[in-house]
Image (tube, rainbow, N blue to C red):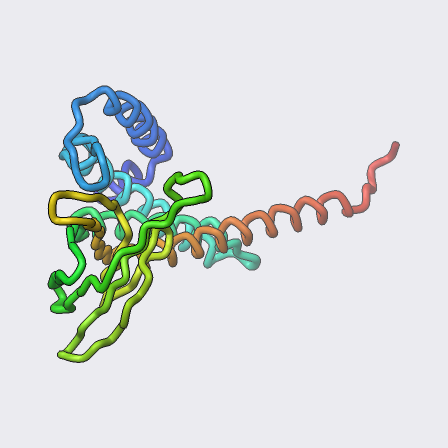
Length: 236
């Protein structure tokens, strides 16, 4: 009974069905009403049981395939662990996605010159000043927020020029220049603070997947060339 269940869980048919389900439902979800967040419209589908349960099932399917194949390769004289590394990277990627999806902190901070805000880790962000840069035609070119960071009652970072594509790392948080504007009180900046516990794991998973792909291709090419170099003893 256990062997039958294991065979079903590692079935390639189940893999194909799940992948097909993800493709179809992801396409259909684009027509489902969205909810707004700091990052923009987000599909409700990707946080619903209709998506999460198949992802867990796909994780179990992939894990079962990986364990079965790895045990089989161990018995060979010349094993190829490239696909196993690729599968392991994908498994790690799924785990990282769940970590980010359920634990990620993502919020906005609006500050005017001289104001401050406290991050969840206790770091104090102080806005020293703002700089709005225009090109020679008067069009907006960049805006900068000069930030100082106070940690443990000491200035850890002083007047860091935060701008688009140049984030600031503060104790696990990443601060991004998100927006800029002017109101009745003067200029203000909108920062985006992000803490993503799965980010490092995603990077590691990508490297593992890349290593698995490279090893798999290397072994395939090696076997291909060895096959072409074998002597032909059959009569012409």
